[in-house]
Image (tube, rainbow, N blue to C red; front, side, top):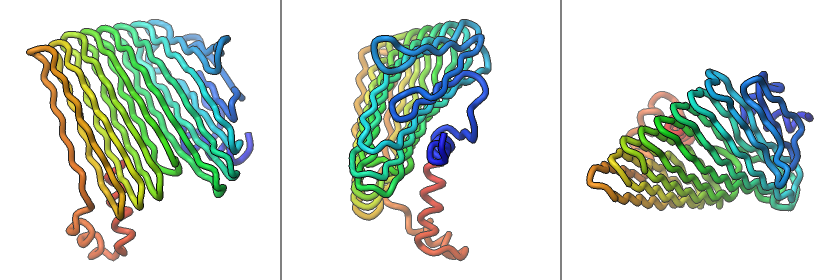
Length: 305
């Protein structure tokens, strides 16, 4: 791998070298490195681009890395990754995509990740998106995540898009069985004329299932963001969604909560707050010697941490 590829890996997966354990590294539309372990088996799909990942029953405290990096301007990459997590597992999955585009063509990565999470298993899924480059071509990412949570299974999904993505359509759907739980923490920063569309659709089908979906975002300059957070309570369950956004300059944010209770014992809550940075916050930091711009950056960094 060259210096640009290594820098992208650092940004999206915190890797300075090839990871220890299971991994699949995809660069410019093809795998450039893959490794399975005794408990995590990664195989390429035969009918379309992508991989199948199988985590064997009882696997505990193991991790895998599956980053995607791109530096070929104009490349349109599509990948299908299926995760089969058997029962009684505890694993961490580090994903993410980084694009370096110095050309004039649009570089785009569309990824469809489908999770089949078995009974009593716990999954932590971390996905970072990052773009850079001094060309006129756009960096575009459209991640789709489909989650099937078995009985008493749980998933924590941490997603962030903090720099350089011109357009994104982010879709996450989930269905939960008895006792299953889903936690989502999303962080998005848009600048310039960037736009970001996010849709969450969660079906709480099982008794005592739960979902907690929180999105934090900052829209700067002329950028636009649109969030739809949809939770369907189809049983005795609890669901919570929250949108917390800061707008700066001429940024725009539209947040649409959609809660549907189809059971008398469903308990669903939504919270939303959209506004500018409070003046007293800026003044307090400026009295400590920061410029207004430095104070604004400190507040944004802390908000998206």
